Image (cartoon, rainbow, N blue to C red; front, side, top):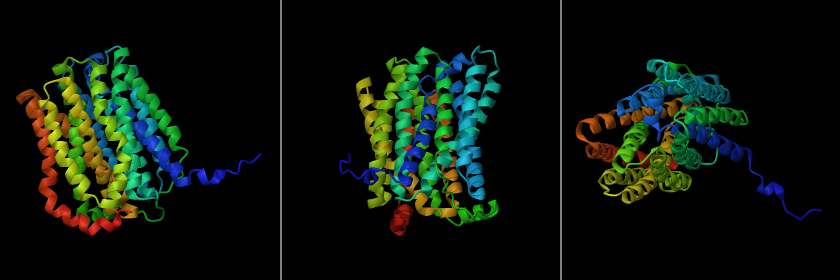
Length: 407
């Protein structure tokens, strides 16, 4: 018996389904990545190195060095061949194998650390393909750049929001457990990616020299690249230095540190999509400028908080500021790049972003070791707010010219 309900009216369109699946792929990749952060000192100890900021920097930095070197290559191959899905699947499968190899070989702590770092590097080289091209496929979709990048942002935020606290709890079960779960997660990402229709622009591929020349002719991409660099620098800072800071200053274990990181990632995740839609309506300047200045100020506030409760509250505010900046910055890449340059443009964004992660590890650990945690937090906050204020006059002109492009 029919109840008179038009089921077709409520059925999601192909674009909506693909947006959801691609967001799930991004979620799984980030979830797997962040699982390792809260227990990083325990993990490097289980792998045979003394727990320290230095060892953690090398282990996390090996992955992001690979991200920097290979993000653009994946984008170029995708644009050149007019295909995305097959490369996402390959990247997820290769990343899964890397995580599982680390868990297997590192179990006894007898494998040389440099060999484990090499495996970590290869794992990162594959993983960035899955992440960068899933985000690029979201750029290929219709429906509004802010909406599509908001979907990517909420996937990134929710993956890290769930991954950080869960990673801390898994580390309590065993230092290598997050590696096993991360490997399984990337296998799931590969299966999800197989269900997405490939909408890569076809018949428009050009040579690498032509792509580089086109990017050189589009200096406006320097704005989202610079902002993305600084945003990721602060993320890398909290992934390593912030984690160790909370554990040492407030006596937290890996599980507790993961929960504190989750206080940042939860609002960061929940507000990505609505604030991405807002940036479609008001332009990119207000969210990026206001969010970055507030973000930098609150980073300093975290280090000045005298109690764990106040520091935790500051992390929540930090997440709100981050959610204001992130989708608008990613959408700005889409506003500027031509259709047949999107893979390389997003690859470039991820190259700069992952350079920022590396800088966050290195700058944060060096300043913390030499001048203390307060100086390290002050440096990160000043860099985040300073880059936007420094480029504000030119950025204002860009937003006036590009405001009509963001739908």
